[in-house]
Image 1 (cartoon, rainbow, N blue to C red):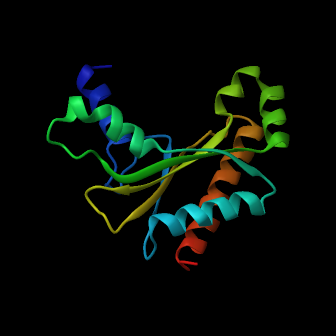
Image 2 (cartoon, rainbow, N blue to C red; image 1 turned 30 degrees about the vertical axis):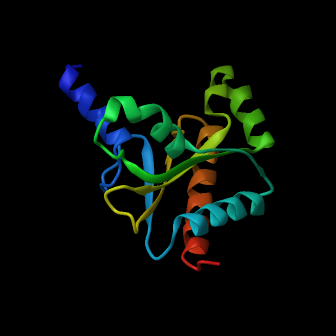
Length: 158
């Protein structure tokens, strides 16, 4: 694949703010909400499915901390960004029984971010696991259900 196409695909995946997402990434823009409400709504949606959040990674802070020397004057792509990781033990068992390499999908994660270019926008995104097997399709359905529920709750700004 030509370098230009690879660079373009990477840029689409790394720099949000457009309605177009890189292939394999689902993006949901949440109008009428804020970052904290979206975060709380996502945690609520995960817990309502009987799962527990395993980790919240402050991705935006990490980029800010480690990217300053490379960026010089650029403020970076996010106002705020984090990755929320969680796991369904039953689903994880199904996935790795189908194919041991599917351990790479665990834990599942959903990103929440506020693009620097749109400070009043909140976005949730996740990697689509595909539908090549029943468990991967189930994981995709779970991720979509979580984001749909979280987006609806986040608009309530509870």
